[in-house]
Image (cartoon, rainbow, N blue to C red; front, side):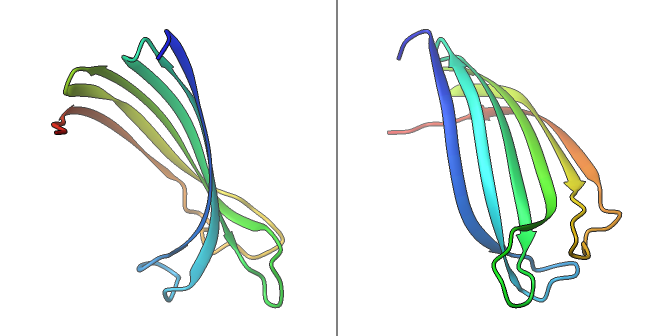
Length: 117
C-alpha cells in the first residue's frame, strides 16, 4: 500500500432489538463509512448508521435514529491502540419516534494485541 489509502463502505441490512420498545421487530438500517489510512499505521474513520421504521403498508424511508462514530487507530505490528467516540441522535420524522428523548454517547480508549497465522 502507498502512503495514503482511502476507505469507503456502504452497508444495507436489518436488525432486531431485544430490549426497549421493540418486540423483536426487524428494522432496516443503512451504514456509510469513510476514512483514510496513512503509512499503513494511522487509520481515521467516520461512520454513520441510520436506523429506520417501516410505516404500515409501505417501504418508505422513515429514519428514527442515527449513530455517529469517529475511530482513530494507531497500528504497529501485532499491537494497536486508539480512541473511539460514539454518539446517538434521534431523528424526528412524520412517524412517531420510539426513541423520543434517547440521546447518548460513549468514549473508548483501547489497546489490542492480535495474532494472525
